Image (cartoon, rainbow, N blue to C red; front, side, top):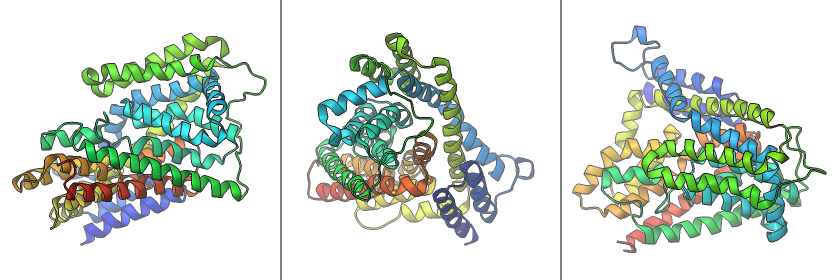
Length: 439
């Protein structure tokens, strides 16, 4: 009982502190201490039995493991974003888009850019780094309140593309191992759900921005924003080519190099950005320095939350919660969706929700003769809902480290588009599968 109070209380406190703007390098360990102490974990490796879970060991294991796995991608993604910004490529592409589509479609351009890169296999974190400079330029051109930039980036990345059939993101690939399906499982339903989420989410985003504009909100510049007045910009084609290089290289090397394909793709994008537009840089080495600092802040914030999740998974209450979630009676699709969603919310990770729930769920549901394609798509979509609570690593990184906003200003729109919209899409998927579509 005490362990469950610690788990729920620690998670609730982490969300509250995140929304109130506390530094995650403080909030993450603090809340992990509450979870660990009330969960009965030893504090240090030296005081715990050999091989047993302990607070410091589990927290730092999760923290350092995430840094070890993702630092090259965070660093190169931040550097690529700065190259696009300092060379004027982002501004050039933004002005061209606004000129062709009109300012009223500036938000659509950002969403589409994120969707194309995400579906092309570029990591969600890297997409946010890469598209942010263009998003700032577009919002500035259209004079839209910049606090909605995180929502536009997140909507285009972690909703209708991340969990759709054919997506190369791991949230679509983890079920394959347990259900013996393919990345295109349930594609008929997936197309309908993706179109619904894209259309409804975009309408909602535009409505939220429109209300803010009607209240008098406008774009507010910052000192760190690139200054483009009276500046010569590269040709829009030269500006967009580095993004194309990232997308193409990521696609070419995705199967052979997996996650490491991003290293090749981003390095290629940086080199292409410099080679094509070297004459337009304001301060190339200064941009690299700023990108490096940004990458360190971003990965530190994210790793702090991952460390919390590693402690949460080690306490007895977590296994109790998993057992309860994975034994929900009724439709296997509903039970599986609830289990994955709740576990993803507890860990702040879509992939974590699947990796914990599927080894338990899959054998049970397979014995029941559940349609694996329907279960694959339902589980994939459900993992992308409650995972986007305020403490989620991607949410924290995008809002704070990349966009420089606060949760108080930006999370309302982000939560609406990355939690509520996917939940509605999940409900639609379950209804369609229950009616026999795609089965």
